[in-house]
Length: 224
Image 1 (cartoon, rainbow, N blue to C red):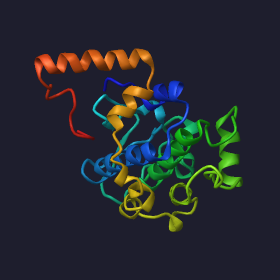
Image 2 (image 1 turned 90 degrees about the vertical axis):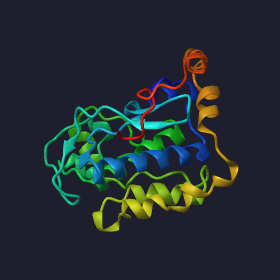
Image 3 (image 1 turned 180 degrees about the horizontal axis):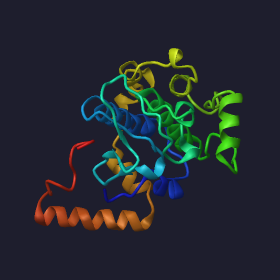
Image 4 (image 1 turned 60 degrees about the horizontal axis):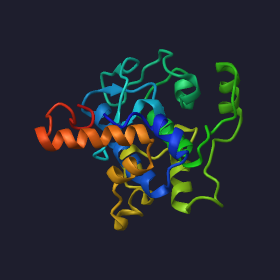
């Protein structure tokens, strides 16, 4: 993935507009569902530095060193693993499910939208746990973002499992399709809004691809 990570991208872009976030989130959710339902894998450390992008506008999840293999779609893992700042509430309680990944995905999208981590800085896991458990879930400011985006973040960030939408329902949320008519081109956006160094590298790769043809193992399908 020649564009680096979302964390790298945010160092230059600072924030990501809603229209592009919708396109990014579609791919992230699709990847999480593929990992969970097809590969029986739960990613336990979803964060901007583990979400990779490339010059074709593809978004992929990386760093499976802390992932867990589950035995069924309803199974849970109870080992404590991952970067605690980015853990969803169930993960902080050492319960890993697809629902917890959706909360982590929502937290990542909110950070990309605002340019800030959703919770104030904490010095330890226990301080973060107290903030996550005792304080209301982070939300998108309604005066800065569309009602659809605010609703999507709220749907992702529900603390109670019974209040969370299923992954399939969430993937059909109006926010994810509200910009479809704009024909959003992530490839162009990543190249133009990224850092000069990454843009240069993408240009070199495009030139090489033109001369040599596409590599079958360079840009595989999401999750494979």
